[in-house]
Length: 511
Image (cartoon, rainbow, N blue to C red):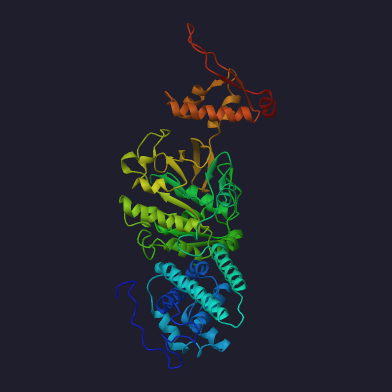
């Protein structure tokens, strides 16, 4: 049977009809039992769906009391981190004395067989919520009619009551954020000040952020240049096994899901270099590894990434690597579909680290030569949706490589010449490319062009390289580590460039 095709439901237990309407005083009450059954079935298939549909459904959304009882049982199982499959669910319902009232074991298993796919559960939940809202409005209208027909009814009092009910209903809907059109909307102040825009980086500093919260980090490079080595150091730092990577702080994570789709055995060997017996408890509790291909590619099931995070209670996902998560990297439409999967996970509070490859034609570019985003393999929409892109250049197996920060959340880091220790699985920064060290070792000072030439490894720096070097030097001045001698405009003598010198404080501190 094709995936997503629902099984034909069999007649439920004689104890209750699947389509039976509950007693109601509302004529023609709006409801959609098929949507209710679809959501409950999806929740039984994947507990992570509960986290997706719960904010949509809100309170008392199901029309059938039996469905509301089953939903409450699902919430109980999920809250206690227990399975939500029909076997576990019938046990709970039996223990509560509710099993026969909801239709018996047969009906619960029939709900589980109604598998439309977890991706549609969000839309089905919106249908349920819409019908519930209509029922609330209809109930309010009926109460208004009944009050208006009472002897001695006061129109002004009734009008005030109706207005109060409508205001409360509107505020309830706005506060809960229900509905496809407003669930993710917020006011401007909250968006700017309360959505984490000013949060501390996951990796780096506020001035030089490598990985910002709520934005994905992509590490790109040819095979063998140490992308995985670098990513593993960030993973272990997120787990609390170290505090910094490349001398920059890394924020802790609660639980990481590592999608080891590309050569999982090799990934395990690489991780083993940094794992010790004392780390067992942390790795068992804080790291979950998915080995091999996903159940579906992310462009085909955009909800899968968020579902995986919810199922494994992970707040961070590492995708190793992107080529194994998407059907093809060069199709723009599939790249946009993958970006939707990325954004749905990020919107749910999941941080994402992605490993990716460069175009083969550029794999042998000289070390130190600055790459560009168009050298990343695949559609431009892959990098367009990433928050930060680190590009590693070098030759396969070479311990000395260069990191280029091609897309930056804040200030750019590097380029950084780094050295991989393949025995220990660590990476260190070459201090000879630290602007502060370079300035301290230059008695005659440096111009922005001088520094740019050193940082790019010689040659004639481009305008962008010079401006980047100027920003490095300006930060040293702001921090008191350097002084600035303003240049002189051109003329017969040709002018003089602005020159920077290590401050006496910097020299004294080092000496």
